[in-house]
Length: 275
Image (tube, rainbow, N blue to C red):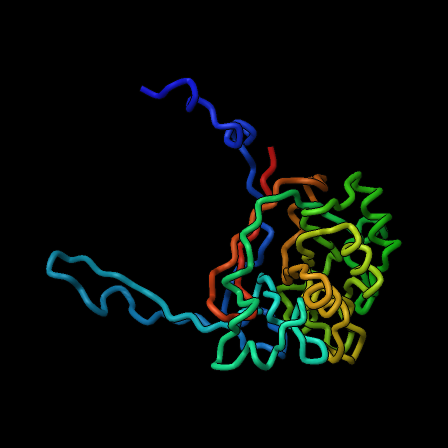
């Protein structure tokens, strides 16, 4: 018999009885958009049903997956970016990567997160479905989005920036925006988020930050600001259309990275939990 002391769990009691789970990540498939800085995703069936049949008639299939750690919906570990040879906290990058895997700030140290998520819908605040290519999201844009949504990031939150660019995800060339550029947060906007003490920042684009037309990923100041200077994790290639359509701007956010020892990033499957 369960005693009264164990009859109720405050954490479980706080969960909605029939929660709605909203996917915040893109599906993984061969040929999906991928930054030119990273190896693309490939999946092939290594064994098909019928290649081997067991005496009782049973058969099994399996696959081989090849992917970089920064492909599809993923999170950047603190080892991903250095500045003047230093990782977050002043760790020497060259020394930390000796031996082919990071001895400090590896992806296995990227924490799972169960926290408040805040959607900053910048596209909606501008009255559009999708921000124009190369648009630089400012701190004023984030303040306007927070005011419109009624939720401003607080310490420990995860801030999700919607540009609407994920609407191009099925068109790899348009989504990568080599010629058009890609909307994203500017260094000023990154500083605004860091000042609010967020634990992670995510966006529905390939780099999270502004990519100007024709310049590609030549300079990424927001990555330096968030990862190196503040130890704030970055998530990219999020799918934010469904959560935006719910009209909810604050929710329970859940994500768990893979514990890739010495890695610089990990695929993730983030979700929002709604009552």
